[in-house]
Amino acid sequence: MSKWNKYYRIAFWGAVLTFIAQLTVSIAIDPYLASVFTPFYAVWGITAVVGWRKEHPRR
Image (cartoon, rainbow, N blue to C red; front, top):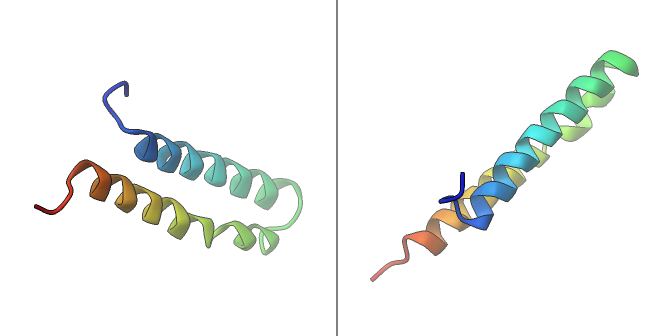
């Protein structure tokens, strides 16, 4: 992962932490409350796209 730019790392670890938090909340507290974390996946996807655009700019 040393060749990934910082946006890819942020997007990857953000998605992993969101999934772990969502899984923990759904098991420990309430499955319906875990849906609060679902919109964050879009944020991590957008962050990955921003990283792609920084790495491959238009000419």
